[in-house]
Length: 479
Image 1: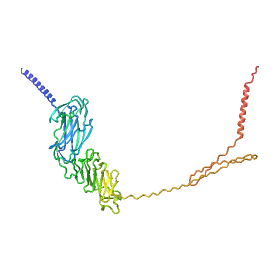
Image 2: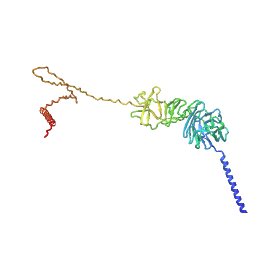
Image 3: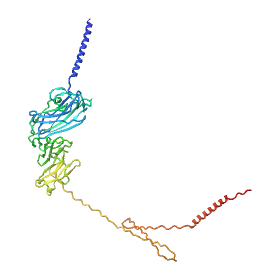
Image 4: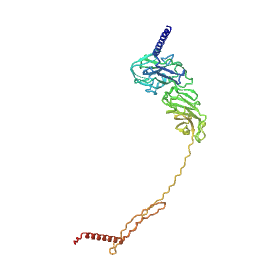
């Protein structure tokens, strides 16, 4: 009896455990998972007037179906979000997996410039689904929840009703804030819409705050859009006036630490690094060990290294040097001064067209790239005298020598002799003329004995043939 009770108890206990496990599994399975997440990775501090870079990643998980139709971003000042804000709508969306799309948002009078580059992950696709849904952090609710969307197209891991797997898109963002904005706390908010314009079904990120410090005291720009400012003597920050495409939004003047070199870069100029990115700073520094000047040349002042090395400008920018007249060697005219740059590939100095102001002692050139530049006096190379070769021409004379041919005639009937002149051509082969006379060969004599023999042989053969012919036609004799 006791044994029977133990068996019953064990079976009941096992059934209860199995039922509990099944219920727990069902409950855990039905718990919502984060189908979409929006994450902002940003530095905790920045400086007004300088580039502020951060990234945004939107992950689409397996349980999500085509949730993204458009993405917006806003950067706001925490104390006055309605006054100081940078609003960027419809961030670029790549059209295929592993693709990249870029965009730029610029309003120099309001929020500066924002450049955006978005790269999609594996399984990224654009397709249609009749039952779009997703789970994420609600833009309006501020909590995680399930969201259902109307049928339609969108970006996500589902492509043409085929579930490819989880995917993502990562944005690299650079903001150039105005220098006159207030310091303090700023916030970044990114909103991914399941249905464009419907904030009730939009996902967003949790708080992404950072602090902005004031622009440097030696800032040299102006206006609400900000400007270039000196970082250290000879180095100027231009990040807040150059967008990601390298376009200068305002005219910038850059000066060397000794104030002897000045660059003037007009608004609209495209300035890029050797790698093709927009410029963020420009430097002009004297070289401690410059390349050797050309033979016989005089360097007037210093040789300067312009950076970043290999930077390019389109169109050309103005580069002006101020020189000291006392540094010019005796006998050298200021009007003969030149600006030369060092070609690292060819290993030589190359001069560029210049304008010399001998009153203010300045020399100005238009340049399209950065390398080492210097003011020089390069003596002209002595003229090379070329002695022309003497060519002697000897006249060639053609002499015609008549050949007289006389034909004898019978003495009984005298007639006038006929003379035919056959000219002889002289072919000169050297400076002295040589005459070659062509004489016709003598006529061959006729051998009468040979002709007579041939005639006799023909007669003999004809007689023999006639004899045999007559012999065959003779009458037959009957005995």
